[in-house]
Image (cartoon, rainbow, N blue to C red; front, side):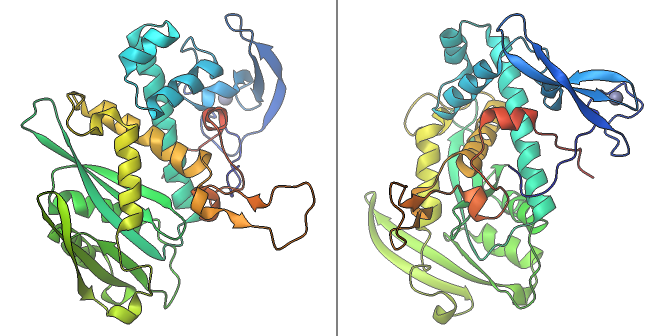
Length: 342
Ligand SMILES: [Zn+2]
């Protein structure tokens, strides 16, 4: 569950009380979907005097699928399948699957942006990196810039674009607005040697609010030769041992390459449509941050004597960051009421 109240509102666009928080919404029994036999919760909008379905909180209402099918489609995208393959597996039209993936990706983005803005992020140690892909023709490069909070393993945001200041700027601006302002707290940042990060950080942040280390890796014939540390802002003592690296973001980088077929190296599965890559990234971000327990975040309970109980407490990056109180799933994402921003 989200770690902030999410009051119900009327999601019906032509209702006079649409999105209004000054309106009474109550539960109004359940109903059975004819095609799948699935039960869904209904609500009643007192201001507009009408009933609506819990599925109206996402763009998947009346999209012909069951929640089970939506979850299956999301998982198959997460495992790297394309919409054509998913359409084949689920015996649906390609256009139908595209509509589902768009709906789930839009809601993932809305959910993540709402959570980060409403609760704000306690960023202590941030790593940024970029991955390349190809767009349409193999000649045109498309870069995915990503940022990660290394202590919580929370994947903060991503941006698609060229390998320039412009994209790095959008990335930094993206998380800057979510930053929890704690007086005196200094953010540690590590990246590779791309100058765009340095420019974006100095443009967007107060000079006293961060320290910055660049890790310069030299490769010879694809083998790592040397690692040089460039202290751009701050000194060695600002980065305790274990933080003078970019290994956490490189791990996420690797995970994404395995997961997203458009990012597979040396294949022809490169991206023909930027939207598909972006949707795939949003689904993966929701799954990674809010649905999956992260092994390195396990809290060891072996010191306490708990008989017949798990010796580890498992947490997701979202829980560690304090945004959620439990592991989430696709069904929760589809029905959670997220108000429009701004
Ligand atoms: Zn209404």
